[in-house]
Structures are given as C-alpha cells and as structure tokens.
Amino acid sequence: MLLICSSVCALIVLDTNIVAVSLPSVARSLHADFSDIEWIVSAYMLAFASLLLPAGSLADRFGRKRMMLLGLGLFSLASLGCGLAWSTGALQIARAVKGVGAAMLLTSALAVIGHVFHTEKDRTHAWAVWGACMGVSMTVAPLLGGLITQLLGWRWIFLLNLPVCLCLGTLVYREVAESKNASATAARLDPWGSLLLSGGLGCLIWALINANAAGWSSAATLLRTGGGILMLALFVPVELMQKRPMIDLRLFRHAPFVGAVLAMFGYASSAQVMMTFLPLYLQNAFAYSAIVAGLAMLPFALAMMIFPRVGAALTRYMPLHGVMGLGMALVCAGNVLVAIAAYAGSYWMVLAGMLVTGSGAGLLNGNTQKAIMNCVPRERTGMASGISTTTRFAAIVLAIACLGCVLTVRTGSYLKQGLIGANLPQPGGFTDVVERIVAGDSAAALPALGNSLEALRIAQAGFAHAFSLLMLAAAAIAAVSGVLLFRLMGSRKGAPVDALPV
Image (tube, rainbow, N blue to C red):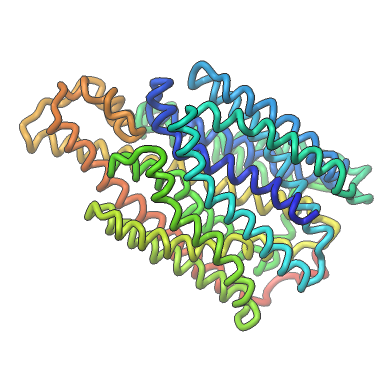
C-alpha cells in the first residue's frame, strides 16, 4: 500500500519535472515566448495548488481511495489533451485540467499514508520511503524527458502517462483500503474559501507573468495585483466564519506548525523550483540538447534521492528542526555556488552547486511533509496533506512567476546596455525578442536582431547574468526560511498538538 500510494505521488512529481526539459522544444514547435512557457507550467501548478485544500476535504469526506481513482481518470484524460494540443492555449487549458486531477490524486494518496502510519516510528519510515520514491522520480524525470523529447517528440511526454495511469488505477482498486473521516460526512464544503484562494493566487500569477509585456506600472498589472491581494486577504475572515473550514486557521497559533509550513514554502521556492529553471539554463547557456541537459541534471536528482535516508538517520541524533535547518543551509550554499557558476559559465561549478542544493533538498523533502503532519490530529490528515501540498505548489508557482520576472527583466536590461555598447541597433518588438531568448528559441529571435550573431551573443550572455541573479534570490529565500523554521519549530509557544481542533 505504501509503495502504491508513493508511486501515485511520484507520478505527479515525475509529470511536473519531466516537462521542464521539453520546454525549449515546445517553444520552437508552438512558436511560444517565455510568457507562454510560464503559463504552460503555471496553469498546471495554479490549478493544482488552488484545489489541493478542497480536494483534501473531499478525500476526508467521501473516501480517499475513491478520490484517488477519480483523480487518475481525470489525469489520464488531461494527458491525452496535452499530447494532442495544437496551440499554446490548448496546451495551457489541458495542463490546468491536469492540475485538477493531480490535486485529487496527491492529497488522497498522502492522506492514506498519513492515516495508516500514525506512530512516530512508522511515520519516520513511511515518509523516508515516500521521500525516496520522490527522489527516484526526480532522478529519472530530466533524463527521461530528454530522451522522449529528442527521440519521440515532446507530445509523448504526456501520452505515455496513459498506460501508467491504467496500471496504477488497477493497483489502487485491488490493494488500497477505503478510509474517510466519519465526522466529516455531514460537513459542508467551502466553495467561497476555494474561490478566494484560487482567484487570489491566479490574479497574482497573472500580474507577475504579464507585467513585463503590460508594464509594471500599468493599470492592468496594478488591478491584477490589487485584486489578488484583496481576495487572499478576504480568505482569512471567510475561513474564520466557517463551522468546518477547509483549513482551520487556529492551527497557526501553534508555532512549530507555522515553522513547518514556512519550511515547506522555503524549500519549494528555493530548491524544488530549480527543476524548472536549471534545464532551461543548461540548454540556453551551454547549447545542450534535451538529452544532454537531462543527463546534466542527474547530480541534482541523485542527491535528492539519496539524502531522504540520510535525513531519517540524522533524526536519531538531531531534532527535526535541526535537520531541516541543515537542509536549508545546504540549499542556500548550493544556490550561491550555481549563481557564481552561471556568471563564470562553468558547468563543473554548476555541478558542484547542484550536488549541494540537491543534498539539502533531499533532507527537506520528506521531513517538511512529516513536520506538518505531526502537528495535526490523525482524523484531519486529508486537511494536513492539503495544507502541505498547497504550500509546496503555491510556493513553486509564485517562485516561477517572481524569479521568471528577474530573468526576463535583467536579460532585457543587459541586452539593451550591450547593444548600445556595441553600437548595434535596438530590435523592433524588444520585449518579444527577450521572451524568445529566455524561452530558448534563439532562432526565432535572430531575425529581429538583424541576423547579427554578435547581438545574439550579447543576448545569451545577458541571460546567463540574469540567471546568476535568479540563483542569488533563491539563496536569499533559503537563508530567511532556514532561520525562521529553526526558531519557530524549536519553540514551545502556542497550543499543544493534542489541544488542536479535530
């Protein structure tokens, strides 16, 4: 049962990370710019993050096995839609539907694990196995994505999900026992909370991704940002008014719980997000093919596979928040190394940085999940898994949007200054040229640059410098998150776990 549920989670992680290597190929095939590429990733993540909390409540109420089977069915249909997509818009819509299925899948699988393994010893073992499965999926994702993209074409990345989902569905039906929270059967759902959370996140992501084209001070950007902040602010009183909300905000009176949630947010936004950005950098900066980029990502993924076991061993000698603080420190150091390597243009330094970051991420991956689950009563494991995975994927989608802004803005600034310094003309449609360069479609950008190889070299150097700043920003996130999680998770302030509401 543990391996089946972990495999269901691994399918989500595999699908999330396998796409990254194919993004330059998708951009060239569908004539997409970087904003389009961001939406292909973000549409999936946004639907996923927005629906994790209600999906967790539904799993508690109607049955976790039933929700897992429904999620596999929807995930399969959406994968078929992605594989047959004829435009970026069609692919983005199919990816959003796929995110809905993934939300149903992941929360139900995590809730089953949390329900069955509830003693400290069993949970330590279960989350170590779960973390190792995540590591395996992350290990094979870049290489598998590169192989499929280069040998079969990017569409098969999605189409090959169909037989995998069929096999998993059969195993879930035969081997996983049904479980639910009996006290939740009469509970009301929380449509207003779900709407405000998804709408607020959506508006903020919309503002960040389109700000470079619309203008940072434009009315459209300001309205989207303001609308997103307003909806997220309204989410708090709406949840407090519910008799049984999808997230009980009283949990945030417990300092270790707040620290665990911040740890998940920091880990996802500073380490896990690199599964999207690093393949793009390797293909842009070193002109690697999809297969070579997948191979070059193996050190990062292998470290993530090995170190969950190291983390499980360290918990015998260190408190959980000490292990997680160490993991965040490694992520910070590794990101700084990659930043220096990006500036110097050295893959071997990138390799060292990826190993360090991957080691820290491996320590954090299973332990962040475990820390959140430990702070919630067993009867609300569906809600806990919803909080955990919502935090994880909301952090990823916000980091993609924010760090993507750093990448496009700084690439554009460097390109403009470089062209002036080289006495080369500014291209028409400057923003579109920058978007094409960042997306990895240099061939589409070259005509707008007057077919000047010197201008293209300046643009690519600008991308490398901008990526260095992106990695420094990610390192800063890891440093702040590490300090906060260590202080809060080591605190005894707030309500004890046993006093938290069921």
